[in-house]
Length: 425
Image (spheres, helix red, strand yellow):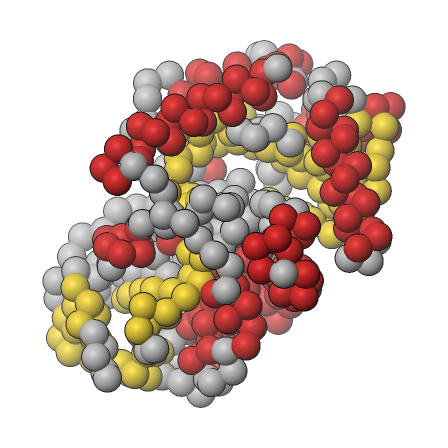
């Protein structure tokens, strides 16, 4: 079975060299079959193997081929909605448990990088930047909730003058500086998790898309070349989950987002753009996010598509956005441009659950997957091992189907056009 290369991105150009892994051929049996070699699947496989389970990991393309190898590499505190919003969905006690686990998710990245010597440019420090007065009010509310309700002391408000010392852009009125968020090379992190998983016995098969699931006491995953029969299945396909089990697609929507990098700028010029070295994002609904790479490029992301199609001129549009923030880059050539799908839910919180008692899934991280997806894999492993209390906190979050049936994509496009307009006001 042939497989696609990693996206033609700066990440793939600077990825740690790895050999191709074989496609599945013939029948295989194991304790747990994990479907999808992104952060969720890799984390689940690694944690399960460390507990002594025999694990097979199936990937339709290559390790990290999806969002885990294409994203902005930003590790962000908390969830997309506030903890107050989560409390209205699940109650105050569960909302605080979710917060505690989101903090664990960031610590898990640091622990895995250190334990397995994963070279992925992990750095801490993050700026949520405000371009409007209402953004300032939003950030003040976030800081107040984090500090007063959750006891989180790693974030503080910064004014316009301090922001300009952190980032050489004139667009910002202020921001929230968070020492607990950070950045990494997402593909190298995924590849490092894969090596760690294989070191403890996980068998990874690439180029092995799951074409059918057989349910029952010993479920099976069928690929074009083989069959894996297991005690448990863990589905970690995220934006492509509906290709594995169609019912998993009803409550998530794949959304395209895009990233470019400039040519190398040289260390002095790059550091002049972001003297602090922070990762940065604004707080628009359709947000822009950026950081410097290890070889002194600007990596700038944003610009989403909800239609499922890559429209012409997206690279030029994203570059124009970058130049609104950094006109000093007008002479810097764009060297890489790529995109990929993230999965969002209606309420922008992750969806965990069970299709059957022995088929579990985690998906829909809604832009916070760099940290939360690794936690999702760990909680799947806990649930398989018989300790499901923490997995079930996530599973209790209510999730609605996207409205519209076959019209849900044009309806979402229309709704997002309103939010884009609001960002401009």
